[in-house]
Image (cartoon, rainbow, N blue to C red):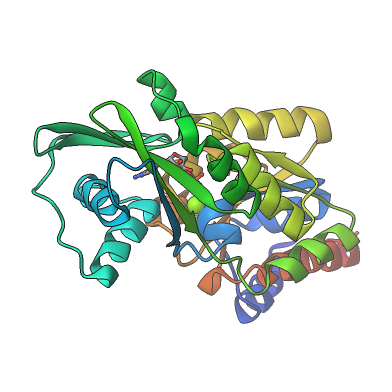
Length: 293
Ligand code: ADP
Ligand code: MG
């Protein structure tokens, strides 16, 4: 491509909500076969809130939230913020500060609260400690089928309850996915969330490939797999843990409202996180490089 064409392209892109950090990316964009999205903060707004609480009967809902919030107050995860926010809203007192706080990346958190070991996280985290959802398993599945993320809370190594947390899908996400498919691309979602929740959200958006329960360092391998199966891949993400996958993709696209680490790893940035910018980028690429040929 001529430098002039790239410059023209860049100018139009910025106007329409796409910031081009690496010029070649806009050229590669026309060859993209699959566009893979991170879920939280990329397809969804990234501001999850607690919607449901279930208890086994040993604790009240408020006691359960209080134990969970003690541990989550030491975590930076969006799910943790949702739990802490829920307890503030209820005006419930958070228990004493957590001791021995541990973050189990992509699985959850643990710590000691008032002498009890408290675990908050996915089934996988519980399995690591030989705990299961017990009598709450059916309710948990039901909530996941609604697209909610459900975390299990174990107190003293026994399941004590579940907390369902829901995030809102971005307003423009449905239209963006539909238009990408009209443009002939396949759409994938790569998430650490569980399969049932991810499938429910994928169905709502019409996503072709739902890849769930991926540990943070597994996203690169999933992008590689898509490249082997389909060819040129673009990846869209916002998180620190998305950065290596953005680099692995043929085109890495960051959410402008996301982390600096993701933005630095990416070739393109969607200003304000607006997914409509993806359509602009593809049309720009196809238009610009068709003209040059
Ligand atoms: P995502 O890809 O949606 O950003 P993560 O990889 O960060 O997801 O987390 C995967 C799963 O691990 C979550 O769906 C949740 O079940 C669990 N998890 C991670 N961090 C926490 C936390 N702070 N509290 C509770 N659960 C957590
Ligand atoms: Mg994310």
